[in-house]
Image 1 (cartoon, one colour):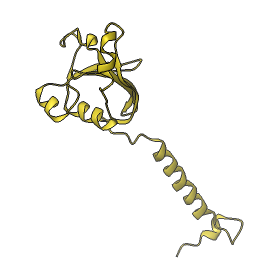
Image 2 (image 1 turned 90 degrees about the horizontal axis):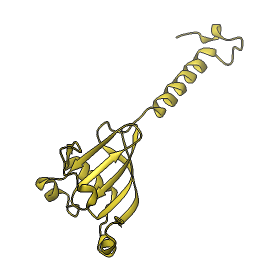
Image 3 (image 1 turned 180 degrees about the vertical axis):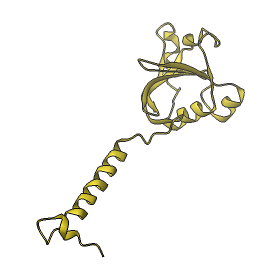
Length: 146
């Protein structure tokens, strides 16, 4: 058995176990501050707007109200949609009249997202941006976005 009393002036309160407890608390605090968000998954999804329509197509406002995107649906879209570059995709996707939007995290990065009816989503922040497009198999797996 270890005699911890030699590490403390107070024979009733050994110093070594207190230091050990402090170190364990510090390690727990540090690990709690590190990211537990998945590296290539959407998490902490917030939907800010639902069923919006672009200003160029005011006649679509009523029809677009039905374009509802839940956090789960966005997550499924993100998993099944293909990553593309804006140059490769149809440059007219911003003309798709119906959309929903919000915020989400990918690892430690917060992104704004806009998912348009037709199966095209933009993800962007101040440093990065990318577009994902839902193809035939994606549209079959994620009902209601295409």
